[in-house]
Length: 81
Image (tube, one colour):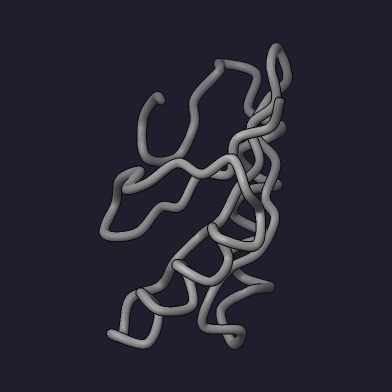
């Protein structure tokens, strides 16, 4: 089963089992002026970037996640979870 993780303010804030709920909550948080990432975590697979809000930040956030994905030390943004 997949988990949808929402991160802002430098840490993971919430976990959802429903993708639509995660995205809706991320949009609400972004309206407060924060940059919000939504990622997918599946069992025994690395986290994968799904989207970011506000939409103007999406390409930059995706590039940051792709840079981390090639880091073979196992480092992840925002620490574990």
